Length: 97
Image 1 (cartoon, rainbow, N blue to C red):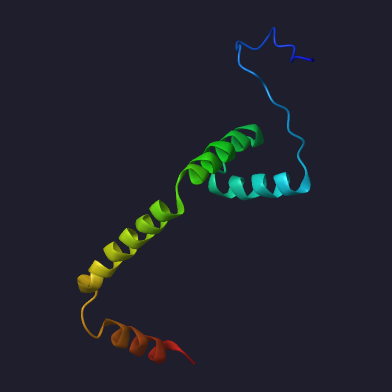
Image 2: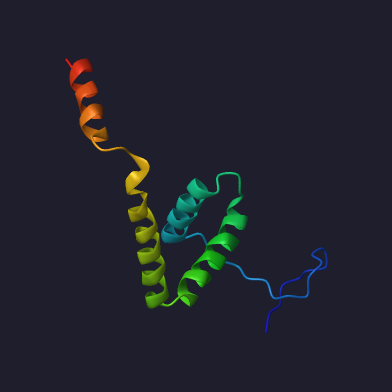
């Protein structure tokens, strides 16, 4: 069995090598939009950890989280007074050619 040669790296943990294929490059490009200041190797770690979290969450738990978020948004009905959209649209009509 081959092992990584790690004299300069202070770790006893296993190391992994991943080739940046087209699909992995696309995933890293997408991750760089979310975390723009990260190097690609750090993005790889973030993607792995984020993916593991997503996989560990059951679909039912995720659905319940989404429903709770929607309920929270639904409670914001008093954020805008009645007629707000009509007044906003009236302003648009005045400035459009």
